Image (tube, rainbow, N blue to C red; front, side):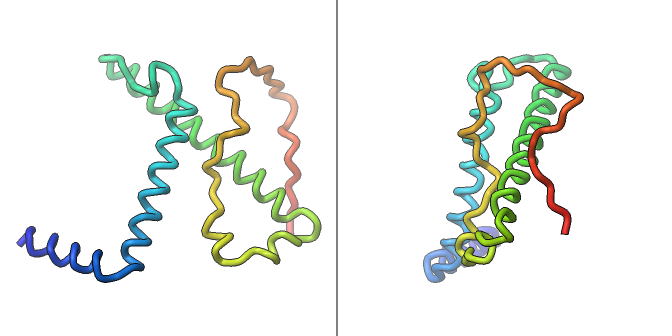
Length: 130
């Protein structure tokens, strides 16, 4: 039964372009997410090398926290750009533009630098409430 299901899927995959496009887009998203993870989790070649379950858990949770922070800040930055100037850019966007929006960019991140944190001051991102 499993081989028949695989054969049907392959036939549909080869016949319908929209299925191929959807799978390709999903694979691109996963590959992009993996490249982001490799960049922000750069220590020890982005590998968890400890045999200790506790160390593995701390590493995995640290990566998850970094991912969440990156996506959150990037989302706020994209919103600030799109909603600036009376939503001019937002009105010009096409459905293809919206499909291309992603919070998975990291060229503004410096993982090797020294960071001075001031926990009494917020990041200067404007929040507009409608």
